[in-house]
Image (tube, rainbow, N blue to C red):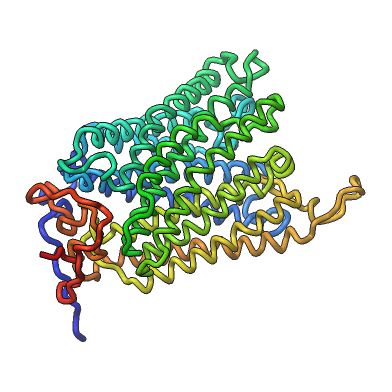
Length: 561
């Protein structure tokens, strides 16, 4: 039987002869980004396991996987905490941001390499704290740690809070590094409005990381102090105010939504332009909208608290601001659609996941307007409708962009090409599975299905104690559809993993520029050498594809003479 000869990867950041120790003490942004990518992907896998257990539990009324409501509370809390703090927030900035940002600037590294390594170690320490929480049986407060329950439960809340506190500092270090790097290390010819839009998105994200994350850190520290010392800060029994915690928490956590989604939008801008073979439409508007999202995100935290007792006037103001913050996001979506209009679209796996993003994030954004309207929000608050909206925004947004970026930069990161057909199939399976999972939740949520319910038997069968209760037997059918979709969704993610990991062992060597992109990272070898570039690259229009031509023999794009 003939064997396929895999061409070895050239001398690069991947082939340092010094072994494991060189990775543990490295200051190379590429290695740090790759280690972040591995850890973040492992967190995604753990969170997906919890998600499947939740979906299996909700398939039918009564206990399926766990026997008590307390165990179910721990299950969904761990799912939310792992996904938010260990995956969604750091997913793109810490992995792709670390790997790509300096190369996009034509630089050798970030401004503070040691600080970059420190951010990785802080992430690992925070992850260890969450694993300790898991080994000790988990916590049952929900990922938001709302008091007074979080100050009174017997579960190890302090360990989880300390873990989130440490992860916050990892995020701050990354944000500081990105801000300084973009300000001070842009090459000649790359002014602010000649930067790739991915860098604009990371810049806006860094502003939020530096300004908003300390608020969460202080809030969690106060919660831990209250638990340990019994000081009344948030617990009303001790003279505290639990609503104050909500204000502090959401003042960070709503801007944190844009820590999650802004880098995702940056990836989509790159992918849409490259695989439409067109200059990005409305560059200035997309760049300005990134900063507008970052700033407006600080003004809308109150829409999470429409039922927390705030005055009608304040609620109306927050409702109006919520509609306002939707405008910059809509600008981006319409500019992406305009970029694709009459473009030469190539349906690579990265492009397929980018299209998934636009479709799913569009649904998430539209339903966000429903929740921003006071009358609608009061009806669907704390129902499955909110669960569906959140996942269409975060999973349909951040995860789809993460996968798009993974397929886009994988040849650059590993030096190997994957199977395009399998990538396209995975994108289709993920799209179908995702919609089967979460769209039914909009329907049952609008009909009154509460979220965080362990057993919804009384919602589907008449209750003799409450004869006026209208049963909803269709809840069961929708939950079954959601569970089938959940397993299909995760199956698509498994296809992604098999395709990409398999390419490292059997994929053909990746050329320097397989996609015909014009940003600087595609001007160095794949994978990049230790110093990124043999000589200083030339910075030009990062969305001009006119001087690139596909070389059939080399199977890559080259610059015309």
